[in-house]
Amino acid sequence: MQPYFFPYAGYFRLLHAVDHFVIFDCVQFPRRGRVHRTQVPGHMGRVEWLTLPLARSSRDVLIRDLGFEGDARANFDKRLARYSWLENARGPAVDRLRAYLYGPLPSVIGYLETGLRLVADVLGLTTSFSRSSELALDPALKAQERVIAIVKAVGGTHYVNPPGGRRLYDPDAFAEAGLRLSFLVDYPGQYAHLLHALARHPPDMIAADIRASSQLQP
Image 1 (spheres, rainbow, N blue to C red):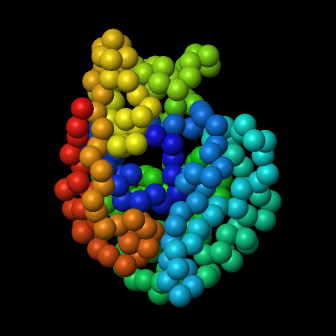
Image 2 (spheres, rainbow, N blue to C red; image 1 turned 180 degrees about the vertical axis):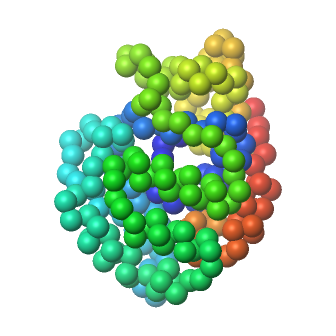
């Protein structure tokens, strides 16, 4: 799955459902997606985007090759300062989140992976991680065939995807490759804005919501 910046809680059901989570970073960066931004309550409670300060890049840049702009730390600090709910929140989990948000900005993919690992740890999700860019994949493989190759490369036998993947993947193709394909059910939970939720709610409540909605379907 592509690495998202504090996605909705339903994303983390994948980490609960699988033994190994592959960060899909060897694909084109979707500029209108959620790799570099997350929705949070802003002024007067209106939902807005909190966006990572990325450097300019070509339209076909891969996620793994994204970079931060030169003054990223100062610009990101200004964006974070808009949210009093983040500054005023208290608790061990929130302290860790703020240390991450206000901490060093290395590579973009490194920052995103650290964020996913942090949330997983806070929520008690114990899956292992790797990046697809670290695998010796045939660059000619695209879309579904690339995903099948990734599953095989990490020794997997069962691929789990969010509900939206039903329009992308053919169960027969996975079966022919000797793999099982399943999809999470639609997320019915209440934590659409995870960063805000982690600042306001006990992590065990969010984790319980994730576990309760992680059923799989063919």
